Each structure stands twice: as C-alpha cells, then as structure tokens.
Amino acid sequence: MFQEELKKIIKKLSYPLKDDDALKIALKRKLTKKEFKLLEFRVYNATAQEMQDKLGVDKDRLEEIEKRLIQKLNFEKIKHGLMVTKD
Image (cartoon, rainbow, N blue to C red):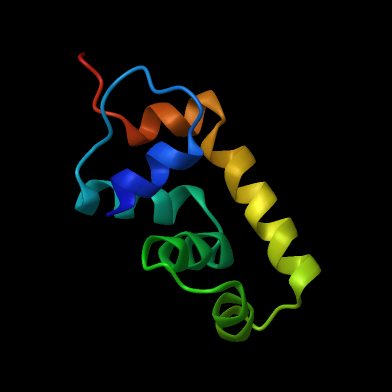
C-alpha cells in the first residue's frame, strides 16, 4: 500500500522499494508525525476535509505539510533509505 503511494510521489527510483513493513519503519524515522499521518491518509484515500479534521489543521497548513512531505521523499538520502539497495 505504501509502495504504490510512494511510487506516485517519488520522481525517480533507482532501486525497488522495500516491503510495506520496512517502509513504515523507515518513514516513521524520517518524517514528522503529521507528515507520516498525511501519507497514511493518502494511502487510505481519505478526503482533504478528513485529513484536515484528523490532523487538526486548516487547508493552507495541510497543503504546506503535503508540499514538505513530497520534497522530503524526493531527497536522495531519504529515497535511498526507502529502497532495497544491492550492497
């Protein structure tokens, strides 16, 4: 579930993503609580209004959190932590 959503967000993947359990652990370490919850809501197809209500933020703040989430997930260092690399 996380894999499909991350494939939509991350612009370029060099290696395949880890399995969902490993992704969840890695994402919890790299993201803030609100960023992680927003990603979870996106995975479960929550509406923007549901996300705002559950996170306790307004529309502008939600957009800001989402923008920062997308930027973080596209940082090379964070991307490599989410992929299965051949070491």
